[in-house]
Length: 347
Figure 1 (cartoon, rainbow, N blue to C red):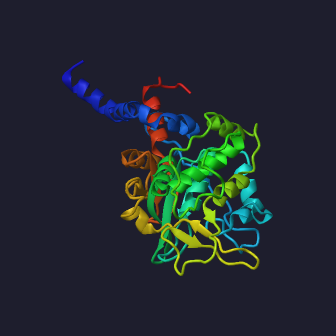
Figure 2: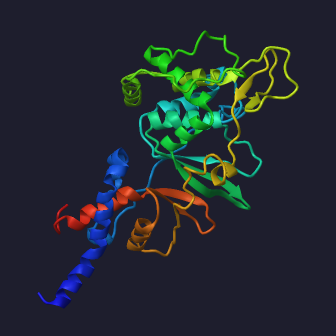
Figure 3: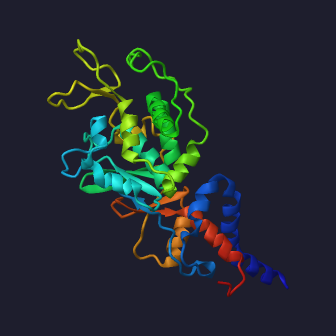
């Protein structure tokens, strides 16, 4: 074999070998993430001439009540979250099946769409019950709805929200501990004034909670997810004794008043787009993991573009930057790497 033959061979193998090396180097970082979703590509041709993209699956729970007069993402009293008005949400959470991501739409500036407490709660529940791994944030910009803002991995979102407000983590641990039979020691119920005694972040939860959640997701153990939500929110809400202060203390929001119900506050804030750009979510947000999906691309063009993009997950956008779908880039790289070393003709 002469030198020109070697050059041709190297050039022929460079692309698939590069993809394989990238996939191998990153395999420890993506771990269980790849193991769960790497098999979703249904057909791969050698050297990526034609195949289907690993398109991630979106979970779309119905957040509004049956009569659309209440929205669980906003200021709803804890006991009402477990009401029959939210049966559609309950059934969606309990239904078999999995999903990869949810979309959090913050709408226009000034709109109040998602409370931090609800974002924490439902990101956690969906990650446990459906295997959701990421949250895609979108907003309305000008005439374009669902404009892409960024991707945040679910585990990082839960961690950052819990760091921003330790009450979230404590309330979640307590709600879980109630289900598995061991209460977190937070002192005498009702004895602590939440305005003066901050919650501890050292609370422990039984070691078998992961097993319990896996059994719930598999349907071998039963729990009403909205009952867990109610118990969580009951620890985030508080009925302050009179006399009430003229102004709400920092970090608290007042729920809408209702006849016969005491004044109720919730420790939460409204999530805004600026939280992702220069706020507390900025360190974990990935605003650059996107690609404008060119309708004129061939299948191989699209594969190469996604493989060259950034991030484990890549958002495909319209020319106006409207979010269209999410692609599992890591699974794509792994499949390309495997196909490049399989013998020709192997199924």
